[in-house]
Amino acid sequence: QVHVEESGGGLVQAGGSLNVSCSASGFIFSLFTMGWFRQAPGQEREFVARISRTGVHTHYSDSVRGRFTISRDNGKSMLYLQMNALNSEDTAVYYCAATSRCTGGVCSEITLYDYWGQGTQVTVSS
Image 1 (cartoon, one colour):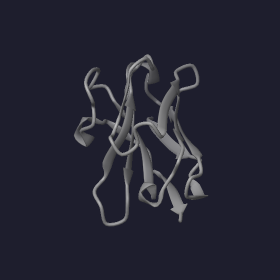
Image 2 (cartoon, one colour; image 1 turned 60 degrees about the horizontal axis):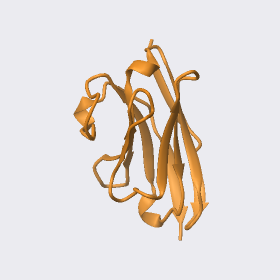
Image 3 (cartoon, helix red, strand yellow; image 1 turned 90 degrees about the vertical axis):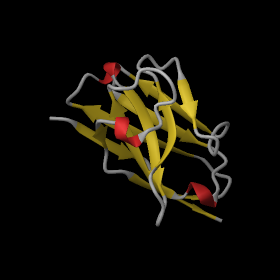
Image 4 (cartoon, one colour; image 1 turned 90 degrees about the horizontal axis):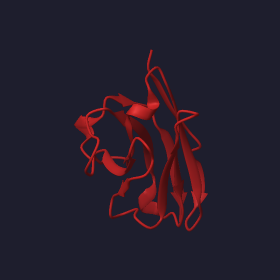
């Protein structure tokens, strides 16, 4: 049974940092490209970052590039998102997702992703 679960969200002041994690089970983690998405109140879910199966290649949205870092540990089936220099526009529910249908390119399309977590809330206070 597939299980994807995010953790590590919370309340942080503007300019601060936060690290969210994602644990995965029920599928061969190392064979899946992994991504982070987020959804702010009243807005559509948007792509944040993705990482290749080996962890060598990454891609970020323009809004987070240079501030966020995506990483993975295939031995532990874990995905991470280190978020620095947070601002109020980063407030959202953050979702972890897995896809076996995108092994190259940006992989930003939500419909490409097979498995999703329930999300973790990140709130940035100004």
